[in-house]
Length: 201
Image (tube, rainbow, N blue to C red; front, side):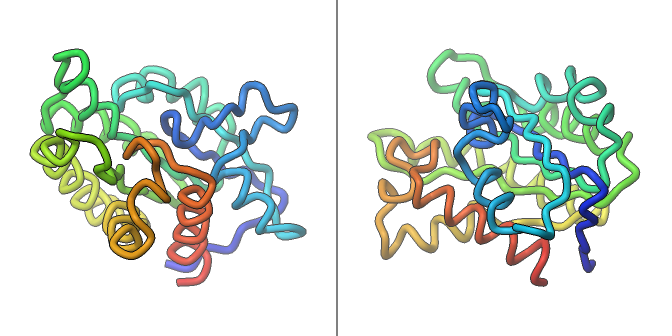
């Protein structure tokens, strides 16, 4: 799939804190993470970009606000990065989300869309004791995202695969100092991966 961004149209980035990045305190509404970097990289080719990330969201939270925060913008492209909180809450609040429930919520995001879609893998770069154990929960959710990308004809950005590959040389804390939230270098890597798989493929 070849994506050509039209400056007259709207691209919506939806997700959790990795996407949010303080966007509600930013006059431009973009935050200071990968969404801002993609916008800056596009320069004159830039479409209208909407950051619809909200810190702490799980897939079900995103589904609950989908109509108001995403569909209302009549997007020409939607990029979704969600899932790490569906895993994390199992370990810090004993509030798990099954892979089946995660898939149901994710389908609720995809079914109403009638535009090209980008699915970014939720990712984990273990740096803390016990985080490697989260893989038991996260990996089935990654398989859901990969399966849905094929089923819905979406572009898959293999962020978990690629960031973990980069972490073998750079070190995981260089990209996400708590294993989840990207550093500036991590956001740069996300932006570059998005552009490579969405615009340069």
